[in-house]
Length: 498
Image (cartoon, rainbow, N blue to C red; front, side):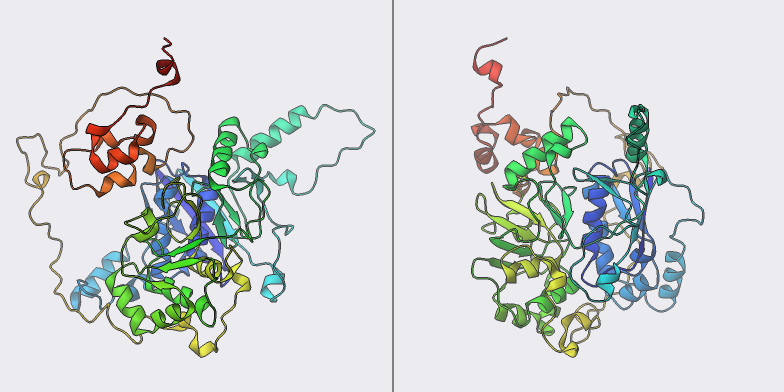
């Protein structure tokens, strides 16, 4: 299916693409994009840098999508120009001409459309105090962590004279139907934080943890209760002020040079809180080199951040970079599943600026209230790409064109295994047994726990599927293999029932 998410308006300077995509996950849910490729469009998206766009596309899968697309434009071409492996000379002109054609046709029809309008409040624009989310033009109602647009008829409070006796049940039923079926239309996107164990469990920094009693159905209520029990929060707790033990800044979602600059801007002139261990892990060796050329590492180390080598690190509890049980972390990664950053660890997904603010304040806090302390000319965020370092363009490689070597079997025409000349591999039908799971939003770490992905075995990982549900000793199975597995029995089988 084709799914369009159109975001219009001007973001608050402290609100980022990470906040946009977390907000989207909260609007449509982690299953909202199932079976779809999501195209992100609108003036807000077009105003974003390439690196900011990458964060959105990176997290499209967290909304259930197969992929996330953003149409190429001059920002795209400027980002690519001069980089290794990119076309040059006449080839560059031809490439740009082709890339310009990779956009949706005017008037294209989509299977799903969600429109979000970004508005800064007048108070924010004037530099006033932190605003709430109660502007008269706001068009969302909150039910649990899901947002739905009320029908136009509900633009003002419903008033029924007390002297009249009428049956309002049909009216209520029709209103609820309209609320649940209407697409989102307008909302302020504030710095956003996850409160639960799914990327859809989000709230603005000036909001509160939702109450499961307000969930739209029993399944959602159960999921919210499970999340809050794991994350160690109570309903109606303000998001602003939740204490943290660790901060992780990095991952493929937010480990780029712009992210490093945003973090350094918050860190400059400040110190990491005494109770916090804050890690900054560049997304690649080139990012690390450029950050060091710009002096960002010195700013971060002086502030007390742990400047690390590139890698996955605490995103998925790699090596010793993991949370202890019940430790709470503000993380720029893309997943906050149970145990994702360490068994029993509690993860709150945020933007790099929000993570840096949490590190220096010792708690989740509104980055809009943590301004840059230096002179404007010293702000790392104002650095133009490749200024002070040209690590992304100094290495020159000839462009080999579209070459796959060695050639894939299905590209060789007909073959013994049934592949066809059209390029499609042989289609196989797999049959098996299925069993229902009474859990909402099965996360990928539950299907194949990340611990099993570190193996170098090529014999298959079927034994690892749903290991925490199947085995009494999943950690041992991950380390030693399926030979040591102790199968978890159901209550009926344990007690000798039928």
